[in-house]
Length: 393
Image (cartoon, rainbow, N blue to C red):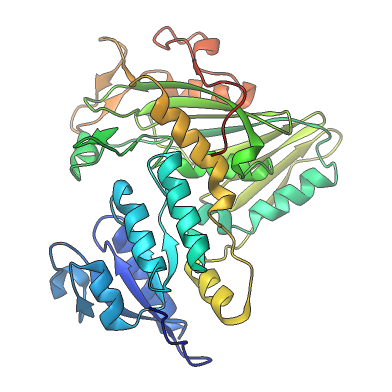
């Protein structure tokens, strides 16, 4: 079923699947764009209907059947912010109706599911934007331009660091939270693949290694202090076809929450991007430090512009293939090892677990492009290696 075209200049009708949890951010963003006349929220898909109090105002049409809601509302765009294992089937349900997509990250829990989604969307001829909001930052092309003109010399590698804190309730917020599998289905909800996935995707983007074929090898170290299946303290090192390593270290058990960042190491300097702040620091030999701040293009607004005037999409499925290779490596790795007793403790009154010294290890991994085990962390297992030849199918 092909959707009727929206009249030129008219707001594009949008359906949101998943309006609770992170979906609340999408509700607020859609309202902002609606006030600008770009979109119109015509439907919400939730298994348990929202109340007006929850929604914060008059509700649009609601239906637990996503396909039926798309049909009844005439939506032209679907924003999908639902549990990770549902992404592919919902995306394909929209695609077969000619509905374009903003699909939350991670786009799928496995590379096979990602390919099923990406190939199906391409065959249907609909546009699909993957929700890595950091890749809408104008800092990303600016840093790549600095690299291209040799501002820091030859690139030696790229590091990423994310030190966050999360209470134990975070891992109980939904049945799939903190799970690698649920009812026999892959979930792969770990620190690297979900909350700090932007650190991985942004590091790969700065290295111009975003497609699946750009990845030639992956090493992982996955650990957990919390009583969960997935990793909450982990690192990954990606070998790319360009030759330089991309090493990202993260934790949800930091002593203090810090802004995540990506750092490009060059032979004559370094560039640091705090990707949530769109802030860049250029440090190079024989120059003083230069700090720059940038704007950001909203990914839903970019999708609307793509449909109305052909503006290129910022985050296509193929442009997240390398990230999905990392997800697949984490899926195939041994289950995250529990950190030994005595290597973590609870913070009184905060109901969260902390790994002493992890903040420094995260920063050191990004600075030296090393894994935790190479930095002497006594609790780190030997790295799990995927073959250097990584399949792109």
